[in-house]
Image 1 (cartoon, protein in one colour):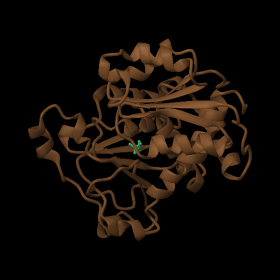
Image 2 (cartoon, helix red, strand yellow):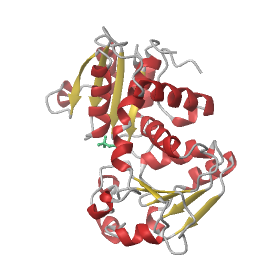
Image 3 (spheres, protein in one colour):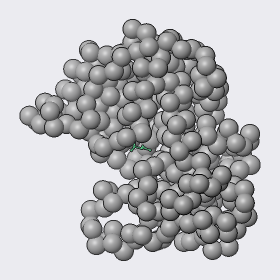
Length: 305
Ligand code: CP
C-alpha cells in the first residue's frame, strides 16, 4: 500500500502488507535512518480528549524528524467553546498544516474529519472505536520479541467493551490468525460484532471471565484499564471497578516467559511491583510510539516510501 496522502482512520482499511511497511520503516528509523526528513512539514495535533503518550509521542516524532507542530490539548481556549463545529475546525486547520492527528470522544469523528480535510488525518482515538497507531506500536513491540505474529498466543484482559486499543489490535492480529483469549467479566465483554469479525478473519477465540487455568497458555497478556469515562451509568462502573489486578504472583503463575503489555495509562490494574520484572514491557511499548509514529508521518507525507 502507498500511504502517501492517505488518512489512517481504521485498522479495517489496512492489510498485512501495510503493517509490514510500517514495521519495517519503524525499525529503520529506530536504527537511525531518515533523521530530519520532515524538515519544512507541519503537524497539527487536535486533542479533544486527554492524552499523554499519543499526543506527546506524535509531537516528539515530528520534531525529531525536523518538522514543526501546532495544535491544542483540550478545547478550552479554542473556538470550539464558541460553538464551532468539528467540520469547520478541520476545514480551517487543514489550511495551516500538512497533516492532522485527531483524538475525539465521539466514535466516527476521525472519519468525519478525514472526509472534510484537505490533508491526511490520523485517528489518535475516537471514543471506544479505534486507535490504529496504538496498534502499530503494539505490533512493532510484539514483533521485536516474537518473530512470527501468527503463532503467538495473546490474551486481552480488562475492559474489552470500551477499550479502543483492544478493538484495533485484536482485529489486526486476526489478519495473522493469531489465537486470542478475551478475558473479562460479563459487563466488559468484547462486542459481539467484533468477535464475529475476528473469528471470520481466522483467529481462534476463547472467551473466559478470569485467568484461571491460563498458566503457560499465553505468550502475551495485554492488560487494559477499565475506561471509567465511557460508562453512562456509574453504578455499572462500580460493579467492575478493581475486579482484576496483576501482581508479581499472578505474573509468575502465568509462566516465566509471559510478556505483560498495556497501552497505558494504568490505574490500579497492574501493581507497580510488576514493573521491575523482565516480563513487563509496557514502558518499552510506550517508547516505541516514537519510531512508529515517525514512520506513520513519513509515509503519509510521502517523504518515505
Ligand atoms: N495509549 C494511549 O493512547 O495513551 P494516552 O491516552 O496517554 O495517549
